[in-house]
Amino acid sequence: METVKSIGIDAGSTTLKIVGVNEEGKILFSIVEDADPKVEEQTEHILNKLKENYDMESSKIVATGYGSNLIKADKKVTEITCHAKGIYEYFKTGGTAVDIGGQDNKVILISKNGKVIDFIMNDKCASGTGRFLENTAWRLKIPMEKMAELALNSDGEVKISSTCAVFAESEVISHLSRGQKLEHVIKGLHRAMVKRITSMIYTVGFNPPLMLSGGVAKNKAVVKMLEEELGEKPRIPENPQIMGAFGAALIGLSQ
Amino acid sequence: MLHVKIPTRKEVIEEEKSKGKRIAAVYPIHYPRELFRVFNIQPVEVWGPPKTDTKKANAHLQSYICSVVQSGLSFYLEGYLDIVDLIVVPHSCDSLQGLGSIFKDFIKPKQELVTIYLPREKNKENVEFLANELKRIYKQLSQLCGFEPDDEKLMEEIKTEEKIDKLVFKFYKSRENLPLSSREFYTILRSREYLPPDKFKSILEYALLHASKGKLKKTGIVLSGLLPEPMDILDVIDDMDAFVAIDDMACCMRRVYGEGHSSDPFERIAERIVNGPPDPTKGNSFDERFEFIKSLADLTSAKGVIFYNVKFCEPEYFYHPILKEKLSKAQIRSLIIENDINEPLPQQTITRIKAFIEMIRESS
Ligand SMILES: Nc1ncnc2c1ncn2[C@@H]1O[C@H](COP(=O)(O)OP(=O)(O)OP(=O)(O)O)[C@@H](O)[C@H]1O
Ligand code: SF4
Ligand SMILES: [Mg+2]
Image (cartoon, rainbow over all chains, first blue to last red; front, side, top):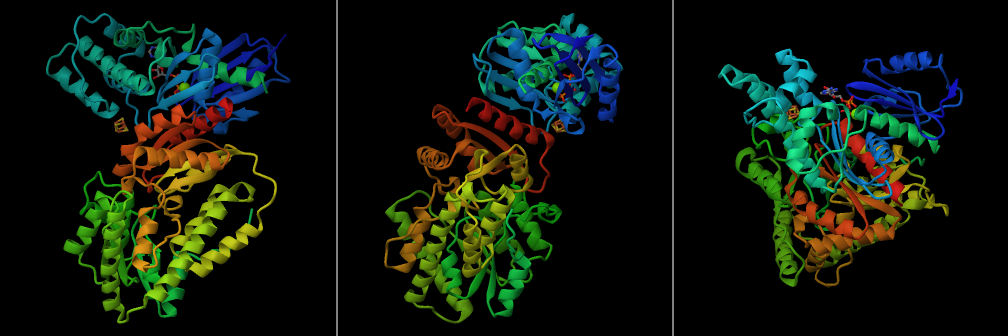
């Protein structure tokens, strides 16, 4: 049985991520599930199952994300610090980290030695987050993966002017009812979101390389458009969604 | 933890009224406390108050007017100020100037309405202008009250305020030695907004008795902005094992004026206000504001500045980008957040404050 030295739990607004690392910070397991309203029970259930295969007797637990208040942990750290840590240790370089989650975007400037220099986060508004795309996907009954594919392969683009998640959804419907092609509208929707993120990046000050984390980094259309807008190819970890939990686990190692 | 009994605004109003004093409801920010006192008028400031239902004010105000004015007007319209004898509206910013006009032209309150024109920038002409403005208010108050206190009496009140300002500064300087949470510290400090000077003084002196040699081993923050409302913001900071070491807030430090020099009482009050700490509503330069905030950080162990802005507070916004840049060049990290004083702090804002404290702690 392998010994898990530290466990990072990222209870996000949309998903729950759990990562276990060994003494060297190597990832032993990672779990991603849709977040249950009773995230504390969900977490306990997952951890109990993991105990069948891992020695977690002396594991440190560090929690992050909106639900972290509900989770029993040795330490609680904000998502900003955790994503910065995860990204920095993964790529071993400073730069600009962008975490696009279900409800928040965070742009974090990381120094050469891995410290957070500055950050910005969307405030009170779902504009430019995963929810921005999800609302429309849900309304049109198109799976998220398909949305990205439609945008990627579209030969045209309709401008969506609203940055508001609620208004954008109705704008999409009105374009469709006026006979615009679905993929053109979906591509425009992705563009509106990416422009919002790009403007956040410029607000903090863009310092390459650009490194992505969070579930939306799996959206290939978003990644491609970010490259178009910034003129810089984003670096993406193998599983960007777990970077916050990975960072949390690493913080636990130094406890 | 310190147990200090601080009377509420309501208790103070009732007690002072029973002693025959008049009560003035005073809107933010700068005004001559001494001038009202010498007429036996107790100023009780109206900063919002927070958590007011603002629907009554909405009919009079544009939606982009800050929540301090929205709440302040609603508070009046709901009848909570029926008990006061005067309403004082300093022309601190466009929104407050608008509030003054709404009172004067639309509401026409039964109470005496006093408006105060405040000049911008520090210079001799502005001191003279304000001194004349204060003389005009003196006349208005003497007509209302039916007597004319002499210069000597007014000077006495000025000296009392000057002493209290000094004591408040001492209270700030002892902050790190006081066993108080940020909420407790600011509850004490802000009781000056409605307490008579002797009562406020004795509360400060009592609190200062508890200053210890040991310093708080916490991360210090400079809090800048209008006022710490909702007060949960102070708890969020304290929960991170940090504390507000000093502030650059309109309701607090920006009104700790220095001593005046003139032997003419009106000029002396004017000097105090005009030459007081830099304030966005006084149009001080970027450099003055930066130097002041930096000096606050230097005076304490504060590691970063949180600009806590009331949404739509125009004068504050104006300074942020340049102040942030100047502070960053001086290796002082800063964070800008905004909220309505009527709204609970959103989770995102809490996360940002926490992440900011983690950041400055990591890098220090
Ligand atoms: N393969 C995918 N393609 C497109 N989008 C995806 C994919 N996988 C996940 N997402 C999006 O990622 C988002 C969830 O990301 P993540 O798990 O990082 O959020 P979270 O951490 O719960 O939220 P937050 O950080 O805002 O609290 C959802 O909006 C989801 O639609
Ligand atoms: S209504 Fe629109 S702009 Fe407002 S918070 Fe929601 S998504 Fe954002
Ligand atoms: Mg997240």
